[in-house]
Length: 195
Image (tube, rainbow, N blue to C red; front, side):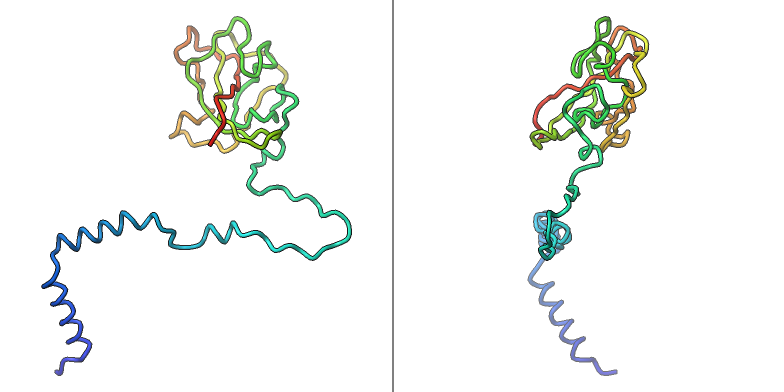
C-alpha cells in the first residue's frame, strides 16, 4: 500500500521535532504555558455581561428607576436610621436577637453579659455613602435569651457562606471562651472599610 503525502510529512515533522527537543524541555514548556495561561482571559464571557445596555429611545416624562442588579435584596431594602430593625444596613449577615433591643447597643453588649472573644464576619454596604464595610458579629453571652419583640429576631443571611467557612457562618452560637455558653443577643461592630 502506498504511503500518502500527509503520512510522510507528519513523520518528517515528528522526527525533526524529536531530534531537536527533549522530553524534559517539552514538559518544561508545557508547564510554563499552563502556569502563565490563567493570566490571560481566554473568553470574553464576563465582558458580555458587563456591557452597558442600549439606551431606549427618549420618551416623554422621567424614566422609572431600575434597581441596581449588583445589589443584593437586603442591600436594596437596607436603611441607616433605626439599628433596632433587621433592615439596618449593618445587619446584612446577622442571625440572632439584636442587642439594641435588649438594653445594649448595635456594637455593645447589655449589662450582665460578656462579649464572645470570637466572631463571624460579613461585608455590608452602607446606603448613605455606598461603601462596603467589614462587620464583626459578636454574640453576647452569660444570660438567658433576651425577651425582645419578634421584630428584633433577625436572620438576614445576605451572601452567607457555607459552614465549611465557619468564620463567615452565622449558624453557630459563638459563645466560645466566655464564662457561660448561654446566648443572649448579637452585636454588629464595624471593623473597617472593605476593599
